[in-house]
Image (tube, rainbow, N blue to C red; front, side):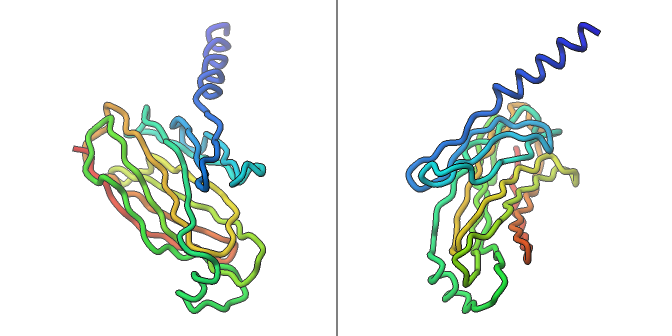
Length: 199
């Protein structure tokens, strides 16, 4: 019983010190979080200008990626609301999100190296009210889910580029990993995939 209590205390301390508060860096929201088990809370994102909490990065790494780390989450605005609506010729009443591009760089890596997942998407709305958006990155290896970091944020209309680096464990299993990127709003869901290979 005493050993079990010690184990739980050590586990709580590990998770506590593995989570690092996210901080703002000149127009890009950033945050550091160490990879935890799938579904575990790993960090919160500060809104631009430090005005409260924008969202929380949840999920983590497991299985073939256990021991890896989730790096700094960041986003930048690529186009304004007016520019984005013009590109899509959008005049609808319900807000929707559309993925424009996804990428992983480099897509050929070695165990222990860092890669960056990049997601570009448009939030289409004619309202000035922010839209709640879920950015989800599901990582699959050999057909099984080995990671699912995600963040729920509030976005005004516009086009956004978000990046989330992943540092692979030094004993990461070799092979091809598939990443499914998803953006989801109350009225829409869009997904695309990209791959990277551990050699």
